[in-house]
Length: 101
Image (tube, rainbow, N blue to C red; front, side, top):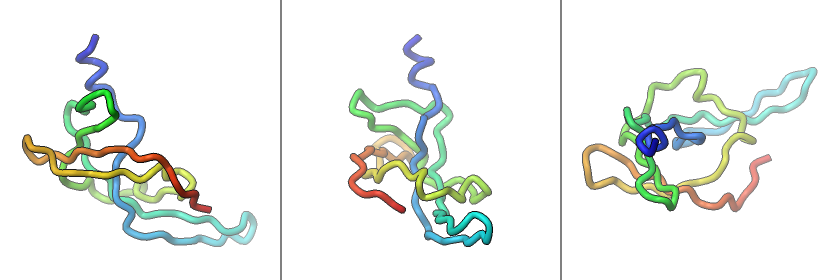
């Protein structure tokens, strides 16, 4: 069903990195993390078209333990623009061009 496809949850989440930090565990070494605030999901998350543009709320979710992300899990940058209808944000995934170690 096309409507079910359009309302399926996204596999990636759009967000903004607030800062990076390191944590040194004596037994397992140095770990690098990012503190991320995620854009809110719309009640019916969907693609705008077949190019991969997704719509998100133009506001952030509350920070939580999910906001702490190992930097290796940051997938790629994205471009964003205000969407014409309502308080929405259009997120356009970009090709990863860098690697965080």
